[in-house]
Image (cartoon, rainbow, N blue to C red):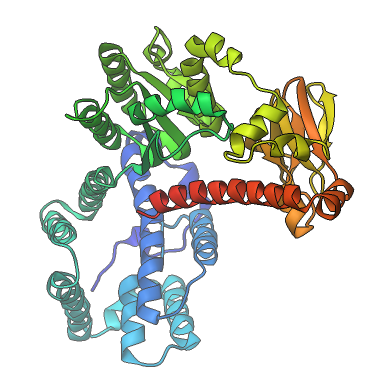
Amino acid sequence: PGPFPHAIAQHPTFDLIAAADWSQIFHHAETLGTIALVSVLSILMISGAMEVLSHHEIDTDRELQAAGLANVASALGGGVVGFHSLSITSLAMRIGPPTRWIGLMTTMAAALTLLAGPNLASYLPIPVLTALLFYLGLNFLAEWLVDSYRRMPRSDYLIIVLIVVVVAWAGYVIAVGVGLIMAVVLFALRYSQIDIVRMELSGTQHRSNVDRTKPEMDVLRELQPSVLILKLQGYIFFGTAHSLLHRVRVRAHAGGEPPLRYLFLDFRHITGVDSSALLSFAKLVQFSRQLNFRVLCSSVSPAVLRSLEREKALFTGGHGFLVHRDLDRAMEWCEREELAPHAAKLSEAGLSAENLLHAALPGRAGMAPRLLSFFTPQKVTAGTVLAVQGENTRDLFLVEEGQIQALFFTRHGESIRLRTMGPGSVMGEIGLYLNLPRTASLVAESDSVVWKLTNEALQSMERDDPPAAATLHEFLARIVAGRLVQANELLEVSLR
C-alpha cells in the first residue's frame, strides 16, 4: 500500500473544517444521511452477530454508547464515521481465546498509524493482508451462502443471495437498502398471514355479565346464534384488515346459519391501526348496511380510536361503528336493544321475591315463604353500597327489583364490573360458605328491593327449620354449579 496522498498524511486540524464548502456538503445530504442510517443499523446487527460468535450476551446500550463517544471524538478530530468490525472480531475469536489484549493492540496500532502517518502501513506484507482478506471474505460467503441454506427458510435465503448480488453489482449502501426493503415486504406478507382473530365466539358461547330472568333469557336465546364476537389481536393494517373482512363475509353468507345481526369487534389486544386498514373498515360498514347488521367495538384504546375517527364513514349512518367501554357493556347494550320490544310483556311477568323463589324451586310447594321468613327486606337507592370488597361479612342477598352490580377494585383504584344482577339473583354465597373476605363490592345500580339473610338468621334456620335450610343450600349449590358450567364453557372455547 501507498504512497498515500498528503491530505491524509498529516494531523487533522479545525482549519480544515472552517475551510469546508458547506454548500457542497449539504448537496450530498442524502448520501450522508444514508451513511448515518447504515451505521446505526450496522451497530445493531453487528452487536447481535457478535453475541452469536462469542456465545455471550452483549449489552447493546453499552455498545451504542461506546460507538457514539468514539464517533463524537472522531468528528471533533475531523475523522470519519466508524463502528464495530464484525470481520476483525470474528477473526480474533477464531485465532485464539478472547482477551482484551487484542483490542488494546488494535488500538495501539491505529494510534501509531495516526501519529506516525499512514506510510507506516506500507511496511506490512501484502501477501499476508491479501490472504487475510480472502480468508475473512470466503469464510463469510461460506457461512451465509452454503451453511445457511439448510437452516434458513427459502425466502430468507433468497434475500441473502440478493444482497450479495447487489453488493457486487451496485455497492454496499444500495444492497443494505434493497435488503431492508425486501425484509419489510417479507415481514408484511408473513404478518398478514397471522390470524388477527384471537378468539371467535357466538352469542350462545358468550353473553353479558348481567343476570337475566327466565322470560328474558327465552327472548335472548333466539338472538344468540345471530351474534358473532371476534376478539382481535396484534396490529391492523391492509393485510390483516382484509382477512378480517373476508372472515365476516364468510360468516354472513354461510348457508344454514341464522342471519348475522350483531358483530362485536373487541380491540383489547390491538396495538395499533394503520391508515390503510381504514378502507377495509369502511367496506365493512357498507357491508353491514347491505345485510342489515350492527358493528359494535369494545375496549378501543384512545390512540386506536383517534385513528378510526379519521375515517368519518365509520361513525356516520345507522350502521356505523358503536364504541363501548368493554365487551361486557357492548353485550349488555345489544341485549337491551333486543329486550326493548318485549318490555311490556316482560314487565307483566315481574314477580315478587316469593314467586321468584317458587319458580327457582320446582316441586317445593310452600317452601318459598318459609325461606323468606328468615330474610329481611330492604329498599335501597341507586349508589347504595350493600357490601364492601375486603370486608369479613357473611350476609346473603336476594334481588327482588332493580339491579345490583358486583364491582372489583384494583390496587390502582380502577373498578371492573364482574356481574350485574337483576330480579331472582343471589349474591354473597362465596363469603357465606368459605367465610372469606368479600371478593367484590355490591353496589345498587338503580333503585332496588333486596332481601338480606344474615349469618345469624341462617344459623336460626338450620336450627329451627332444617328442611328449609337444606332447600336453601340446594338452591345455592345449583347457582354455583350453573356459574361454574358457564365459566367452563368459556374456558373451553378459549382453549380451542
